[in-house]
Length: 236
Image 1 (cartoon, rainbow, N blue to C red):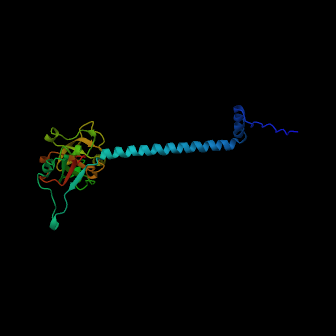
Image 2: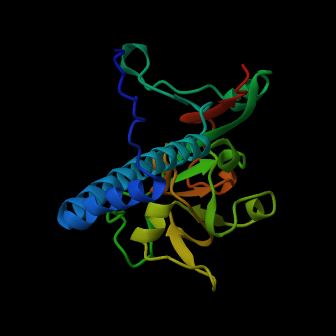
Image 3: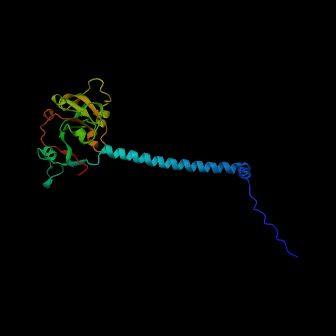
């Protein structure tokens, strides 16, 4: 008598349609859990997208700001000399700086002993912290500045009394547009405002100033600059 071995049965397997029905039964039976799970996944994806988007946006904004400010701007300011005297740049300092091969552009700023007022009827002591400076025509290029209204000073404007106002100076004087001729009282003369500048991020003092290039019209003779801006070549 021989023993017979039982036949091996094949493993039970679900058909694809059965797998889909079983898988779909879970979300149908637990709708709240399914909704919360989907909400959590959506929030996570949205958070990742938001963080990555903000990072790229902040990076782009930072690069734009650095490019606008200029990474190669040097400021040289006169200080107090040995023994307590005022340190001043010698006459011809700007020309000497411009002869340096690695300097792309340079500009000098001179203090002008004159008050900046809205009109002659305002007391000379009420300057509201505004000043008057004389500068080289290359100042705007050196500082990467921009004109918000009007125009910048040039050879043509140097032939008659004209100034350009910094952003803060224009605001404090109540000058917002130049659609018609506007004059301010500088020293003892009325001077036409031909331009208003955008804010200088690295030169706040110029924002509070009236700037002109005609040194011959200054109230007192000016020969030595008090401030030098230089822009060396980035590759150097």
